[in-house]
Each structure stands twice: as C-alpha cells, then as structure tokens.
Length: 287
Image (tube, rainbow, N blue to C red; front, side, top):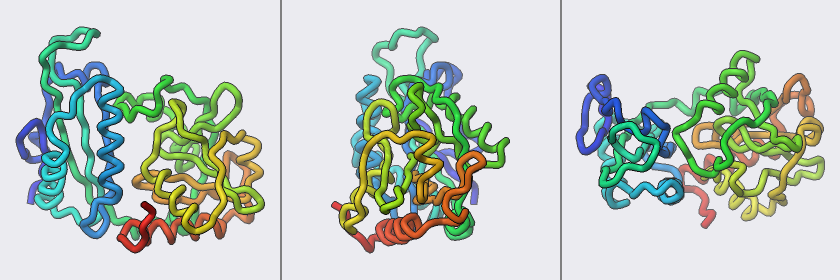
C-alpha cells in the first residue's frame, strides 16, 4: 500500500504530495509544526501537543486552519490509512500561499500538511546504552518557545553532533548556561538525585515530554528544580538525559569528552524511562 499524506484538504500518495512554490513556509519558514508519538495505536499526549500548536499559531498570528476536532479526525484517518501502530504523526501549518512579500498577506487561508512515519521504538539501543552529547553555542532566534519550522540553526547543530559521533548537541547561551538540545530538552541529575532542567520561557521549547516527566517526578516524589545549569555543572552531574517525543527519556553517558558516572545510564534516568513508558501506554495518570 502506498504511503499517504494529507495536504490542504486532500489525501494524496506521498510521492505526489506537494505545496505551491509560494507557500510562505517554503519561502520564509512562516509556519509551525507538531510531532505526536504514536504507541500501540495511541497518540501520546495528543491534547498537550494540540494546545502547543494553537499557542504557536497564535504567537505568529495564524488561525487554526480548521476546528480542533476536525484536525484530530484527519490525524486518526491518516494513521489508519498508513497502518501506523508505532511511529509519529507530523502536523505542519503555514500562513499559506501568497505572492512573496515580507508583510503578512490578507485573506489567505493557512496551509495544512500532515504525514506519518513508522518507527520501531523497541529496537533502539540508545535507551539501554545511553548517548553522547556535545556543547555548542546557541545561535537561534529569541522566540524558541514557538515551535517554528525555521530550524536551520538546529539542523546545523545536529549536523555538528553527527560529525562528532554524538546523538545530540546541547546549546549554550552567552552566560555559559545550557538552554536545550537541537531537538530535545536537556536535564541533569545532581549527586543527591535531584532533577534539574531549564525553566520555561522564550529561551527553550516548552516540551510536552518535559511536562510529562515533571508531573511523573512529582507524583513519584522525585525532587526537581527548574533552573539554568552551566556546562561545568552538567559535566560534573551524577547523570543526564534528554527528553522529546522521539527520545522519550534517553540517558546521556558522555558530554563532549567527559564520561558521566561510570559511563552507563544511571538509576534515576532508567527509572524515569520505565515510568514514562508506563505513562505512554496509559498505565499512569499524571493529570
């Protein structure tokens, strides 16, 4: 069966799915997106992802292209057509098609694209072995809380990580403090088992998985702090990990050339991953 995408009101085969050359997402990066994990046929944290989509759209003055319920129905139908049981649903909304002009066009309908991807989450050694991250300067724009499709600095950082043989790059602000990864939120664990992650603001993306982990930690009595941490503190931490829709809770075992602990995933990271897996399949309520 051919892979199917949804583009502006039509279900199309993936190879024929396309947008107009003057779509403002293509020409200006004028749009936002969401990625929703699908596990055992269930969309994990669907409501918070749609909340963030609406917030990002409102921040750049784009209207939701249809009702929220209609968006949900299309997403489910696309998953059904593509027979996705484990994987991702990708949602992208741009300002739409208009003659090239930096100013916002009037009376233009937002463009909506949705695609899916199959992923075997069980066959990923990163969860058991941990990963390496590198530190890089944060060169992104000042509104990182908007999930913009303009991801060139993130792509450059992820490429630097790949070339260094690392999984992720943690971005560092002008004060020497870690903001987040190029596609994930950054966490450390102190010697006394306390979680530390940067607080919400315009400096980082308001991660949906980040939100869930904080709620799980609170429910399990794991202490945490939302505060910035330095590169040096990270390299001397007991543990570290990253979170995102595809990373879940991925332990970090090395930062640059510095191993953390004994170079293997630590107990706090492993417990959080186990609890989060329970949460994803509906075995845990964090509301």
